Image (cartoon, rainbow, N blue to C red):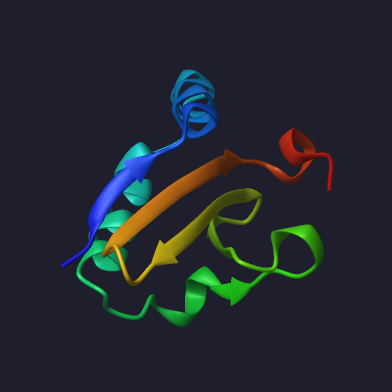
Length: 91
């Protein structure tokens, strides 16, 4: 089992997503699965990022709602880095 750590940016993103009315229960369920080190269902399109984000993974919680995270295996930490839309990230 991994331990969840959140960046300060993730906490800000979470507040924004919640205010917009997104179903944060979906995020909670995905984080629970990741913390248990289980693979995500294919519908979440979990994949490794490239470029400056190459050490991170991204999954689609909904069509235009993303979670960016990193698993630090040595420390047994799941680092929730960002959550939001493509527009929020400037992608």
